[in-house]
Length: 313
Image (tube, rainbow, N blue to C red):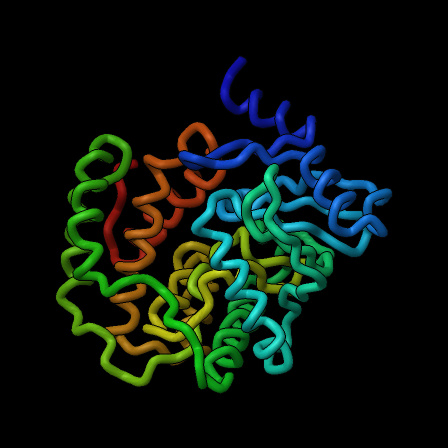
């Protein structure tokens, strides 16, 4: 059976497809067991696997109004703890819906990580054909970023990725492995150009750090929520400009940049972060998350188009 068919069959059986080395077996049976042991008042509710291109948590809907998020590997359990601390402090300042923690689950012998239950947010992951007006979505996302940047930073953790220069070796290595898959010459030229831009030396700001389509929720043609705040913290604002290419097309991208008043240096650093993220995705998930790979290749092509590079792939 082809890999894609295996994935579909697993999802239909309530089994989360594994994507990472050392990943737990996570399925509906496990969630039911955890609920029965720790939150028996929820144990009789229906539990369904939420299909998603997300790579950090397995998500299961519990009844109509709740969902459980279980980190796939140990290191991401720490991200859940970060969310638990900061979401309640951030929420009052944000117009869009964001995850609302309800109760945190404890590690067990069966599942050795912290996990959590949140309020369910009705909607679907961002897709172009679900949007009425990309320009409006771009303005709404820009407003979210500005609201987040306005939250008090006292005690905030660091967020975002390392400076681009620290990502150089890994990025060049993966570019080399992708010859014949992407336009490596054009990509390498843009990556090198992004490294020439001065690093961020301004005041750090709050950043979400992972504004991909899978973390944007739409309903009735509009952006209604932003989810997955596991990497939230303070850092280079370029980290949250990545959706200029990973989410938007040309019209939305131009609106997004104008709304945020992005200077050239920040734009080029954001291009570098978007390239790095997309390039690392392509060889990592070809079988386990092919939709994510398609998104990453689209991101690369949007970047090449934006910088007047015509891709051959």
